[in-house]
Length: 462
Ligand SMILES: Cc1cc2nc3c(=O)[nH]c(=O)nc-3n(C[C@H](O)[C@H](O)[C@H](O)COP(=O)(O)OP(=O)(O)OC[C@H]3O[C@@H](n4cnc5c(N)ncnc54)[C@H](O)[C@@H]3O)c2cc1C
Image 1 (cartoon, rainbow, N blue to C red):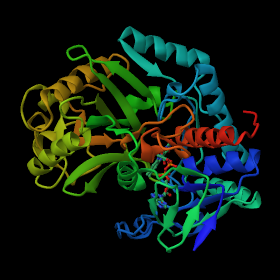
Image 2 (cartoon, rainbow, N blue to C red):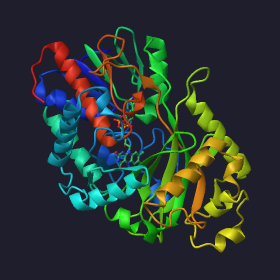
Image 3 (cartoon, helix red, strand yellow):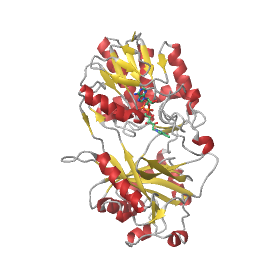
Image 4 (cartoon, protein in one colour):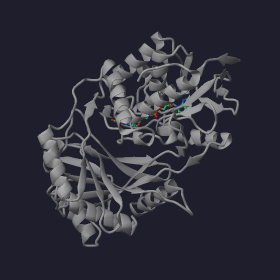
């Protein structure tokens, strides 16, 4: 059966929801949102109760109304160049305006209006200290929804959309977008809209590549971020974490002129091991009711390959597989002092240090045996530079866990309105490589909706 709609949005994550929001508020177009996951009330991750991943298909953490992070504690990074880069598509002033607009919708639907922002003086002092060490302190105004409130905010947005006539088709996978822009559903039904906005997120990134290849969309590999997760005593990070919940420092390294950054700071948090197909990695998280004595953060080098090999994902995975082999199936752990001296760590050396690891399912080893020399050099130089801003961060006892690798989806080529090389096919969000976070994913959804309205001749105001 073929159903009609003006716009079909694939994916009910932030990108898809905000595209629907813009269309519902500012046009009379008939909008259908399709998602393979469940409604926000029905999303529950069994890990919360059992501590074990039950391999739900689709995964409740990544899929359903609210998308990835719909169950997370939802930190909104309110900057056009964090979690993506809106400056690629518009002027600085327009980009900030769009971020403020997205923020206002989140706040309207229950996000606490408390803004985490350092006072001018604190910010200035930290920026000056960082700059004198050749580091950029990236000041990010943030809001924090909180894991107990994220589903409420999502629910409020979805209810608003329903009240404005947006139809949701859930627990239904889009199998294919045809060259005629028919959307083929797993139920066997077909939708025949005038416009499609594909916002499939990370869970649909490989599906998107298949669609792109079949439809002849221009795509290219995105960069990867490769490095370690650093764990230090929380007291060392207290001065900067009291200024910013997730302080971000950007460094250009001396020897290689590479871009290195801190990412995802978990103050008084815990290290976690992550399993992928064929290799392991590390990550960090914070718990609301349980605090550790440590703080962890990712310390990553940006790698973008060009000819003859562009597949940065394959390169990252080969590093991760080597680390997994040397770790005997576990991530590696090493004291910074041992890395400096060119020797492996042992449990004896780690246990005698000042930092007690919050993850024990790791193998003491030598990160220099795993990571390319260039990345090891960046880690050593970068941490020593950071030590001038955060004294103690580069002490011999500092723990390094490897590998920490961030992959980004293939980038679909788009114009300023998110339209692809196939007419009337728009894209948005993380699954097509134009964002890496809630705010920019939402913003690209708004841009796609505005692109559709522009083509329809709908007059709208930002
Ligand atoms: C645990 C976790 C915590 C996070 N915390 C934060 C945070 O605090 N701050 C922040 O800025 N970012 C955070 N993120 C990242 C953030 O969630 C993402 O950047 C954002 O959700 C991307 O939005 P999106 O709409 O592009 O994609 P997604 O949110 O991934 O949504 C895509 C949707 O598309 C659906 N879909 C995919 N393919 C198909 C198909 N073929 N048919 C039908 N449906 C399909 C999926 O089911 C999914 O619901 C977190 C991510 C995770 C996983």
